[in-house]
Amino acid sequence: MKNQKPNGAGVARLIRATRCSWLGIRAVFIHEQAFRQELFLCLLLVPVGLWLGEGGVEKALLLGCLVLILIVEILNSAVEAVVDRISSEQHELSGRAKDLGSAAVSLALLHAGIVWLFVLW
Image 1 (spheres, one colour):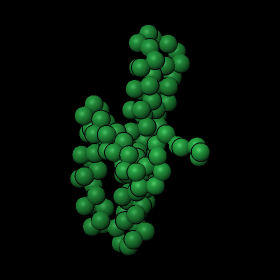
Image 2: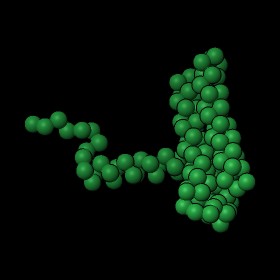
Image 3: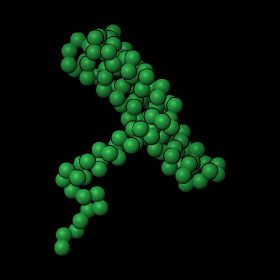
Image 4: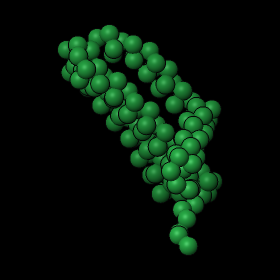
């Protein structure tokens, strides 16, 4: 008897993984105001980036750093959810974990600003 993986294999696994991904995106949209704000900013800037980028590489840079912001915000939200799930008590490490996630989002925003500045200047 083969060892069966808990998430299945092949197309069935892909379908389950896609469903989990969709549930995660839906959850972060519903529960995280920062994600909604950043998504709104990205939706405004995507057409601008496509219009101002002078080739495929520039367009990819301008849009890629926007997607990076959303990815980092999702990871930050995941860290915050895990920390909140573990305990509602104040703890130095819990605060540090949340601060590190916030710092990562700030760096992603700074990175996007620098990329846009360099590409468009």
